[in-house]
Image (cartoon, rainbow, N blue to C red; front, side):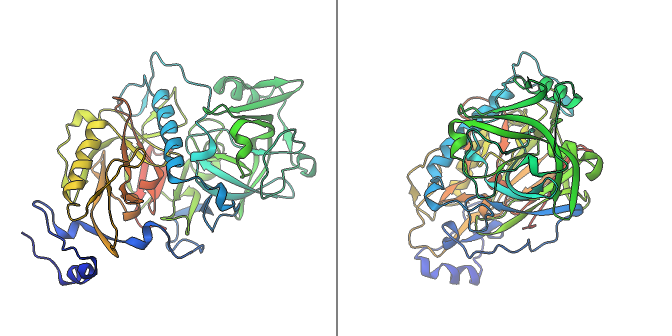
Length: 461
């Protein structure tokens, strides 16, 4: 049995528990989590502690329901964790449906016998992170959700027959000297119609429509205008000028959505010529702190794995998860379990794993947590613990291993959420994994589209 460092003993004296090094686990592979951090933390809305890997432009990124949010939402509007997990399950199921027929393999793979839904996602409710930009000349401040699973960006515009309330003023096209609606005969309108069924023309102007899986929708004029990002600007940025909404979209309180997907309409694709087809972000550890989004991110200094793309589902960025380590030990999971890709998704909250992989992870994690009583499952979480009376909690490390022997050691915030293991199993027999935003916290995630790689850099925010 491994010896127990004196510092660990001192930390646990007030907890009435003694940490026992279970067979096969090295105490050095445990992480210390302070119990108070499970519920709240000191507010720190300052810029990230580490300078982003930037050769382009960086803008602050905040949690939509946190005190650092540039678009404050009343606390009564913030969903409970149970509500968030329920909505998250719908988004994960939607992504799996989109990939239901995608063949495995590297690079640009084809798809067979698949009908790609025209909806863009389940709803905006699972999107959690905001940036502030300027649109128009002069620039009008707009606070927008980011989503790596969406391509079409949009904001609410005047005149609006049916829009939700928002903190900023509605974008007014008539006040911008650089605003221009696309005509029905424009190449941009033809491209939009080809890639997003249901978009097209009304009179002489190009019309866009976004549909979400919960039945909500938004529609308006497909347009272009100047986009201000920090100290940089993008001319002729294409976006939807939303003038009518329905369903749950009317309950949202943000100004719009910024699409960072891999399709033709996304911000990442539109600015590829300016920012070298690379962007990165760092999601903060808690809603009480800040992260960043960088366009034109420097691509050096990252641990990189191959980016997998599908020509039939171009919005999503895929990677190949090959193994999982718990407490420094690699789990005995057959390679065939990870035969499918995993999607890096900023809009999915909790990482989804094939059922066999999740079962192995849950069992190994429980074995390393025997000093804490089990607690009742909560929603999609079935590996929960009772930390009552604890001031510090010792949890086994968890690392995700991607192709190319890229090992991503998760922060404590990416392992435990509200006293539960922050992973879930697919609700069906799908081999598709989804790397959610909880597991991405504090890590600068690089999307090097030009280089065909996804990169990771720990401790960036």
